[in-house]
Every structure is written in structure tokens, then in C-alpha cells.
Length: 74
Image (cartoon, rainbow, N blue to C red; front, side, top):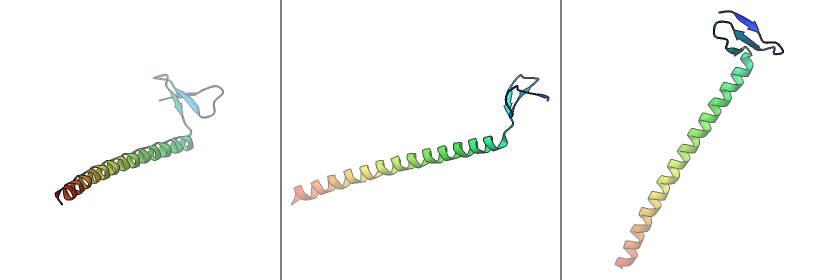
């Protein structure tokens, strides 16, 4: 593959076969990938919290039903 520098951009090159623009700034790529990993982790954390909340809601509903049965039975 051969590349041609993109005028006015230090880190961009054009791949001559496909005409694709490629960013050669590895530091920018590393930062980008770190942001992606952090966003995925944050999303996973949120999903986990929602599951935990739903479990707690179900358990509280069951406790409430049991308390109603106990108080009505007395």
C-alpha cells in the first residue's frame, strides 16, 4: 500500500488503492480507544445497577405481599 499526505493535515494520509483517508496519529487512536473502553464500562455498570434495582423491587414486592398476608391472618 502506498500513501499520499493530505494537504493541510500533519497526521492524515490517503491510501492510494482505496482512496481512504487514514489518521496516522497513534496517540489520538489510543485516546479514542480508551474513551470507547470507558464508555462500555460505564454502560455495563449502568446495566448492572438497573438489574440490581429491578431485583430489589421484586424482593420488596414479595416482602410486602408476605407482610399483608401475615397482618391479615392475625
